[in-house]
Structure formats: structure tokens, C-alpha cells
Image (cartoon, rainbow, N blue to C red; front, top):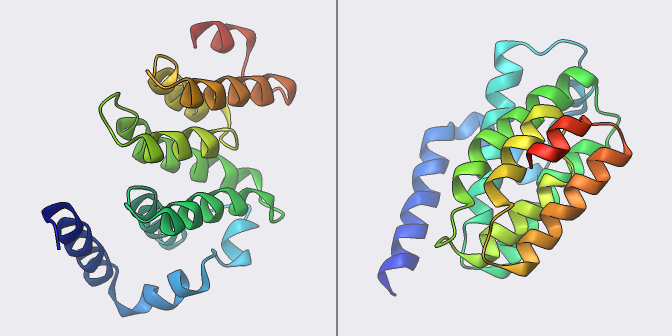
Length: 168
């Protein structure tokens, strides 16, 4: 087993250990509870649960296994379409953006950067702008394409202002 694969499995094991047994069933379900997604106000515990879920999916995005990457991307995106409350969307978008924007570095794995760009089309408001700025100058045309699609979708749905569009 090569070094990067060992490192990946060590990171995954560390995540499982840090999340503890109480959250393992949540991640096995591959979604957040509807009570959190639809909550009009998020408690500190809700935010911790959301953060743990996002961390698990972002770890999948960084995997060298294409199936895990696709699963992480899908699971991050699916949470937006389940009757999500504005409070959930705002927190969830910001939390994703904080974790993925730093991964959009030109020398990072293309599969990771591309899937982050795809997920970014679902983000809202200023959190979207953070990710878009990070990926707008990516050396890969595929990443820039998905970043441009995200800008277009956000502009169409009034999720970002004209000034924010120009900033990207």
C-alpha cells in the first residue's frame, strides 16, 4: 500500500474516532436528519452535527477512490433539496465553503477541485463567492466551467448580487 493511501485510511480512521459512536449511525445513513434540515433555528448541537457530516463528505471528496468522491459530492448536494430551511441553507453553505475553498489550490488533486466546483453551484450568498473566487483562476478548464455554471445559477436565482458576480 502506498504512502498516500495509508495516509488516507489514517485520516478516515481518525475522523471516525473523533466523531465518536454517536455520530457513526448518522454518517451511515448518509443524510442529515430532517429535523435539522428543516429547523428554523439551529442549536449548537445541530451545528456540530452539520459540521461532522460536512467533514465526513469533504474527506470523501479528497479520497483517491472515485466512488467515494462521487458519494461525497452527491451527499453534500442532496441536503439542499430536502425542504431545507433558510437557517439551514445559510449555515450549511457557509460551513461547506469554509472547508472546501482552501482545497481549491492549483496543485491539488483535479478530481477534488472539480467536485468542489460542482458542489459550489448549490451554495448561497457570500459563501458561494468565497468558493468561486478560489476556483475562478483554476488551471483546469473543467473546474472553471463548473465555477462559471455556479455563477450563472446563482445569478439566475438571485443568490449573489451583480457586484459579487463581477468580483468573481
